[in-house]
Length: 95
Image (tube, rainbow, N blue to C red; front, side):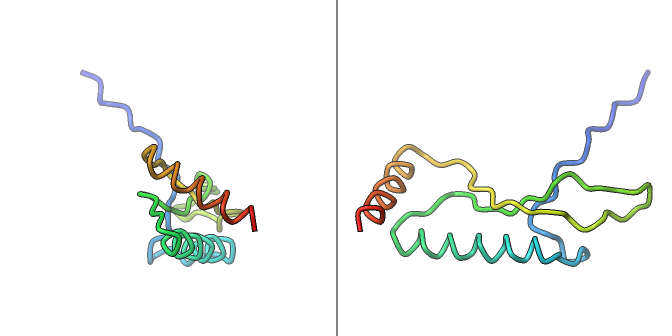
């Protein structure tokens, strides 16, 4: 009987406490929080706002190098939330 193959690790999300956040991650977390507050103020709430970094860049050691970039992941939303977001964007663009 062959042992099951291990799946590759998923991309890191918002940094864990044991991994100090790089400036890029801190910037993305601040942007995520700013976007969430702005959307909330406009009456729109996305179900998921997350920060993602690229796959860990290891050098053969147990520790990963600092992430060269971080992305704000907007996730998915329902059709009504997408329409509400579009309306808020249109309203802001019309000003």
